[in-house]
Length: 224
Image 1 (cartoon, rainbow, N blue to C red):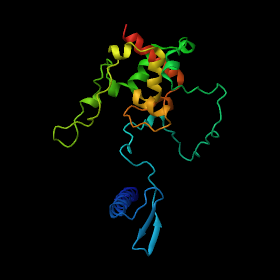
Image 2: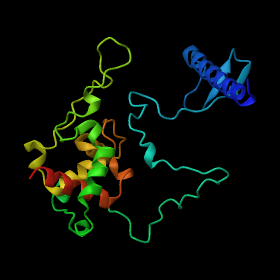
Image 3: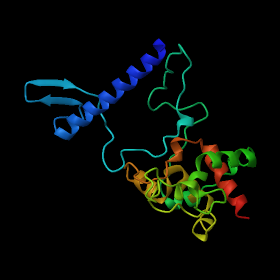
Image 4: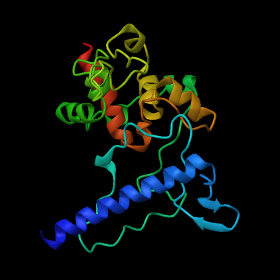
């Protein structure tokens, strides 16, 4: 057996042991999830990793790995821009008010619209829930769980039918706002400065302003 295989097995065993250790301390009530501090019997104190995201929406279903930074071997982590800095192209104005959204349009991005690229963006980000034909019947709604009991992987609210009058009657700006902030619930949460608990991601953090306006145009094209 090669040394690399042994190293992989030891790494897996160490990871499993670490998970079991954290689970044990959490279940025993001596692990502080906010600080990572562990107290055992009042005599032993040490720190474990902190899990800041807790509650009913602790796990993000869509981690959007294709937007995560990737590093080559020996490459140092990228230096992020200072907080509050503005790109040379200008910062996007965040709009939460429905009446203001209704007055917005994507005319500034219409010249760069590419139907094939917009279709690709839809396929990567939206099709899993809203479906190939935008009927709200994406794979996530029918995928069976691995438990073998007939249950589904996802049993939450049914994704919105994007060709229904509920959507087609909206203005371009409203659709753009819902894409940006994660649907109606996400927009409502963002307008109050709260974290969204909706299953739909807030694509304002994942797609560029231009890509989101192109998605609006793509949806309009498919509904004609």
